Image (cartoon, rainbow, N blue to C red; front, side):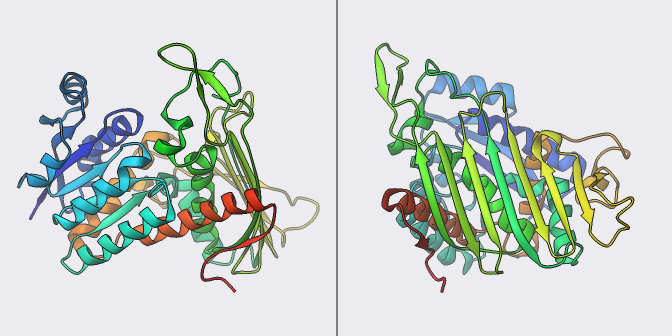
Length: 379
C-alpha cells in the first residue's frame, strides 16, 4: 500500500486545520504513505458539500457510518465535538480503519476506556490509532523535550503551565456547544487544560500522580443563538496544582476569560541546573537558562527554533523563516502516516489520551470535594 484514503468527520475549526495538514503533508514531508482526501462526512449535505469543495475533499457523506463501508477509506479522522468521539472511534477501529481522534479523547473516563479497549483489539490486526495533541509537534516543544531528556536542565523540580484565552470574557459572548457539558464534557478543563497537561508531561517525561483543584463558571447564562438565554454547564476556568512521579511540583491554569490573552499556552520547567520556557504566542522561540554559566553574564537566552537540525524544520524553509499554528497539524499527519507504514504505534496513543482523561476527572473530583485526589495507578 502506497496511499491511504482518508475520511474525515466534521468540517468546522478543527476540520479546516486537519484538511490543510492533509493537503500539505505529502509535498513537504514525502511520507511513506500518501494521503488521499477521499470523503468528508457532515450532517448537512449543503454545508458538507461546500466545505468539501473549499477544503479539497473528493466526495461527501451525510452519515459518518458510510465511511466505514467504503473500501477507499482506510483512515478515519474525527474532528467532531467530544460527544461523538467514542462512538465513531470504536466503530471505525472495529471496522478495521486507522483512527486519528481530536483531543480530548472523550467526554468521560468510561468512554476513553472503551476507546482504548477498541484500539487494543484493532492493534492486534495492525490497525493504528492516535489522539491529536498537536502542540507536541511544535518544533520548540519537541526541542524542549529533547533538552530535558539530555539532562540540560538537570532534575526537573517545578512545572508551571498556563493556557489563557479571552473569548468568553464578555458576558454577552453567545452560547455554543463548547459550553454544554453533554456535548463538550467540560469547559476550559477539557478544551485547553488537556493541552497543557499533555504538553507538560511530554516535555518532562513526568506523569501527574495527584491534583488539588478549583473550577469556576463566571457567567452562568449566555445569549442563545435562537433568542433568550442558555445555561452554561461547564467551567470557564480551571486552576490546579499537582505532584508528579518524578518528584516535581506542578501548577496549571486554564481559562477562557483572561482579557487580552488570545492563545497563550505557556510552559516553564525549572530543574536543578537550568530552566526552559515556551510561549505559544511566540512559537518559534524556546528560552533556555543554564545555571552553570558565569553569574556576570548568565540569563535566559533565546533559541530561534528554525534550524534544519531542529525537530521537523528540515522539511520547511531556510533558517529564520518561521512556522505557524497550522504546521503542527502537518507534523502530526507526517508522524501518523510514518507509524502506520512502519507498523509501529503512533504517539500520543489512545492510552495516553485515557491518562489525560483521568487527570481531567481527578481535577473535577478535587474541585467538587475541595481535597487532594490521587490519580489511578499512583502511589
